[in-house]
Structure formats: C-alpha cells, structure tokens
Length: 113
Length: 114
Image 1 (cartoon, helix red, strand yellow):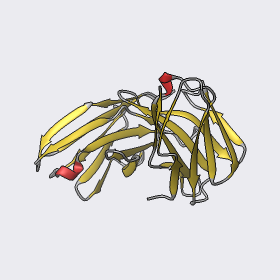
Image 2: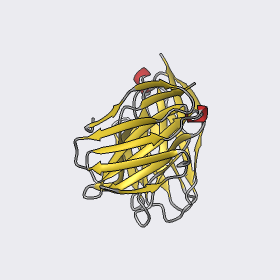
Image 3: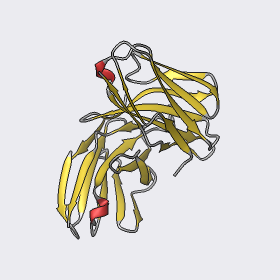
Image 4: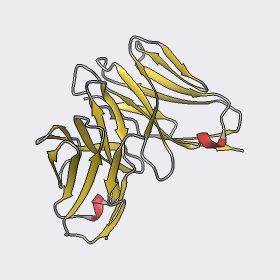
C-alpha cells in the first residue's frame, strides 16, 4: 500500500518568514495530494490540493508543488502569521484505487510573533 | 464547514464497557469514514462506508465495529473499550459526484478509557 512520509514533525518560524513542509510518497499510482490544516481542538480542514497533471498550485500565501518523478510534494507558506500556527497534514490517494487517502504524520507549525 | 456533527464530543469511560460514537452529516454524501488520531501517528483509518449498510475495514479496525443504517449516520462502536483506544476520533465524509478523494472532517470526539 501507499506510504507517506512527512517532514519536519515540528517547524518553528518567525512571523513573516516562509515555511516549507515536505512529503514523499511510495505509490506511483497516486495522483491526488491534499493538504489539511488542523487547529487546536478542531478537525482537519482542506486548505489546498493538487492533482498529478499539475506541477504547482497557488492560493494567496500558500502553494503546493509536486514532483512526480521524485515522488515528493511540498507545502509552501509565505509571509507567515501567528494564525498559521497549526498542525498540517499531507496525504496521497489514487483515483484508480479506493480513493481513500494515506496521511502523513503531521507537522506542527509554530509562528512566533 | 461541511455539515458534520459528532457526538459526544468528550467521553470518559472504563475499561471493558461498550462505547458508541455517532457521526451525523447533512450533506447527503455517499462515503463516510472513521479515523483515530494519536500523537506521532497522524490519522489512521478505522472503518469506512461506501453506502447504506456497505462498510469495510481500515488499517486499525481490531476492537471496533461500525454500522450505517441511514445515509446521514455512521456509528462507531468499541465493543469492549481498552486503554489503548484512548484517542481522538474523527469522522469524515466525501462524495464521488464531486471528488471522492476529497474528505471533509467533523470536529472530533475525545475518548478517554480509564
């Protein structure tokens, strides 16, 4: 089955800096890569996703990049703000399989004011 | 937020007792999922449902059972709770008419087994 590795497990940045979270996946059939943000005491919320026919996608201060050859994808947050502090999860799934995503173990992002 | 509610939101119980957690959705989505979240493990799939009365096991299904008698409700039962089942449980939904692989999560249930 699919295996998703996520790094780092904890990331501490100063407000205004950029943050990058990286994930690798093992199944070359995976073609959908969502990112979720989980604030304290809440359920994960989808913030951005990318499909394998696209190399990069942006939404305001967040962007995701995908390298299918290397089987890795990354989340980039620019101009970080304290409200970006949360746990971020990457995931990978295949439309040719059960559609059920495999999640990374999460990255705790701390943005210091 | 997607129309997903979970009940109860917090529960403390004793080892050996049965526990049922409820997930209720108002989105009429076909797929429903139960995950558990533990430090260092991320989100792990317990069971999922692809329609009324259609369910299947996930990677950590031992000790859990599920039922789905209506589209909107998905129940997770711990048949005889153990301390290792202390966790935060999340329900999620998805819909193939939109994108089956995009999941929307409920607010979670924190379960403590003493």
